[in-house]
Length: 163
Image 1 (cartoon, rainbow, N blue to C red):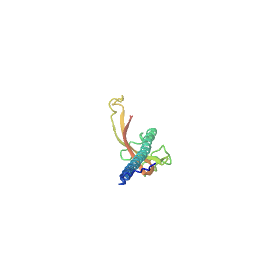
Image 2 (cartoon, rainbow, N blue to C red):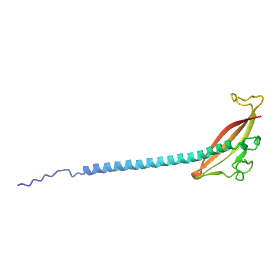
Image 3 (cartoon, rainbow, N blue to C red):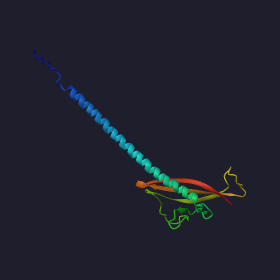
């Protein structure tokens, strides 16, 4: 039996270089994926914080609609807005100072103001007789606060019909 040994002349390191290049390419793709995931996580967190603050401001809007003292006959002065909430009596608006925000839990709170703007005729199509009834127009500013000092402000106008 004869022993044959064949020597292949591929000791130039091309396979090692190819493996190293593939490894570098995979590493760059991994780093890019981590950066993208980190950016998307920050974006989702910011969106979540904004929504929490927005829901706080929306709660303030509902708070005003449930408390007619904000837009009743007591609030027909164009110079003094009614601020809310009132810690001593939540159903009574205050007209001076800065009220403490109403705490909703989970670092959410709201506050705001209702300002009487003017008196006018009822809007067209409202079904009210313009010679008998008047439209009282208001501007409402609701501020919602969320975690990490997130703040959202909603401004809305509304009216009530009265005599």
